[in-house]
Length: 542
Image (cartoon, rainbow, N blue to C red; front, side, top):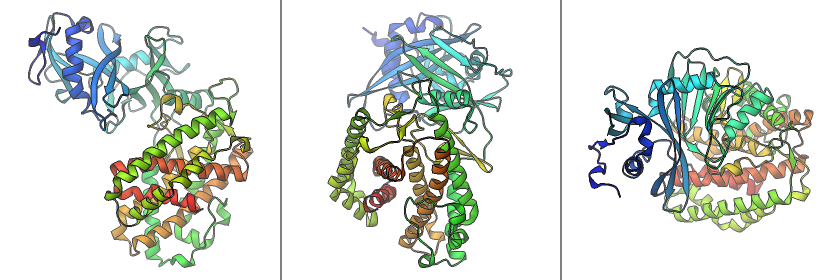
């Protein structure tokens, strides 16, 4: 039983008769640290993904030492259990510091050890810890069979450590920039398997030499008590860029909307295009080019080429079975239908419970969504694999403009972790590559509508008129993208299906993506709910 005097308040100091090296053996410390301290601390962290759920208790699932030349840090794998009967695992490296001036805002617990007083803090905020990690990776042996495994790309020599700093605002992971040349992503949410970002990055850049993703340089994995390989960190080259494609397209689309006013462009004079029709740049009508400009058109074409090349690399492996292309079958169909039916039911409940937050077109579209629920459910269930001749491959899984960096006139694709709501096994299921394409198309749609919402007061047209222009712009972006994407994959013999199959898969995946998005918007941004609802309506009415 824990002694009463050892319970922790915000102002009290925990005392232990152990040295720092032995602190994990102190059962009183572990019990109090997990319950009285970390429960409060972890819920305040940006990388904690359980903020909408009620925390029940935290257990120490695994721990390991990260050490070098007498410097010792502990890596904790925390099992966070929730009242709703599920759990997450998180990685938290901890350090002991006695220096009062170090990282005052990141202290977790004041503590008095056998021989000194100080604080336990998140080790990532200490430069000495970051340096140890860098040097362990840079000096890694080709084969590491210890429980904490450091790896580096064969033939690559890291320069000596000079500096380290955090990259931007901490989100679901923590990224450290070393020597202004390398980036180490620490995965905060941990899965009992190799992280897809590690697998995909290493495969694309190291095995396939795909030039348009940050080169894989090293990693940290641990072998847990179940002998499972768990990814903790991924080291890549820091690529020079001009920001992400989301911000780039927002600026370009804003210019396109400003052009409507400056050139007095009438919607009724703009030629339409059929959804999913392939359109070469040379076939884009002059009135459309005059409106949207060649720059955007060429960027969409280049992005289509890079996306196709990524899928070609992912679909050209025949030795590593985890990346070997496969056909559609009944097992995949059962998995898909179960997953989407469950997700759809969840979105129905959300829509029913949040109608009071909506108004105008959003409310009308939400009511139509609920009225047509049986039609949508039928579409999701109507997936006949026997008619599909294309291949399934490992895909990006969470592909959108925010996952793409702009490099002058080119693009670099990153962040292969997969869809945040999905389990680690689901993220590794081979899917039609057109699911990534659908994800990018939904991102185009979002960029168009968010431009309207963010700049509406700067345009002369009404919101309804802006939506009309936006839908036309969207169709041309899709058509231009598809022409290059299909031509590039076809020339490389990546089998994505014939025309009718491609259109069926695109519609199916677009519907799936829009339903997925609906959950986020209803919970977080009701005003933006019109974007996924419009996407759902477009598919149902096409």
